[in-house]
Image: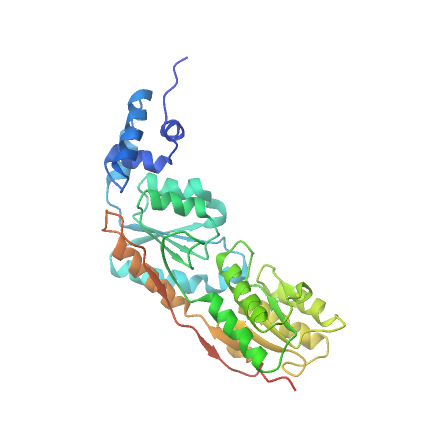
Length: 338
């Protein structure tokens, strides 16, 4: 029985992505000539006939960029998500572009590449990306413009804009160490497969290691980065025979949970527990929490500007990395150990 050959059949046979097949057929992207010819030989051998409508979509210029973010409903995402959308949206609007918003949890590598292959977007930005080397490597192979609002996965060359989360966490931990604290707890900002979670945890561990302070898993909580995770972690920490005297939270949502639980336990901040959090938000201001200020709006705008710089370029270029400065805002929750 005769079956119509589809693009995915060509991609499977050639050992490339569907987007790469599209680029080879349409003469777009930045595939090497060797790769292009290899794909075209498979196209010819399988007698593949591109769908004319899909081909028009793939070759037309679009005035839409994609913003891929974690699925809403997660407190750590909802809290800063609008700031990111606003920052990207302002730059896009000024340039006459629209934004296509997609949830990373529901996309997966094939869905992201489908946006590229069908011409839905002319570039992509990723906020709080997962450590998904496969997707980013595919985009690199196609020379498709994208920017991460996070440092790149290890060893992967790509454009990104962010603060140095490892250094920020290191400096926060160092501040506590120099203030006399050695029992320093840590609550992660979100799921462990997020690059930002990994980086902030890494900075914390490096500071402990450099000052010969043992890493103690009993005072580390790598949860979902929400209020409840702060409450649960604090309840466990303070029940220990040797509870922490200081704590770093990877985002301000769990910090709020920490303060609530400390009060419920009849304890006081900073007398019984010193707190430093990431994100200098209204929560940090209202609760008087010492915070590492992460300028998310600036990160979003710089990411969009970098993306629009890359969109017109059709040849492979060196990736650009922009490090935004963070700062520490000291408030009522910090004090040296007595």
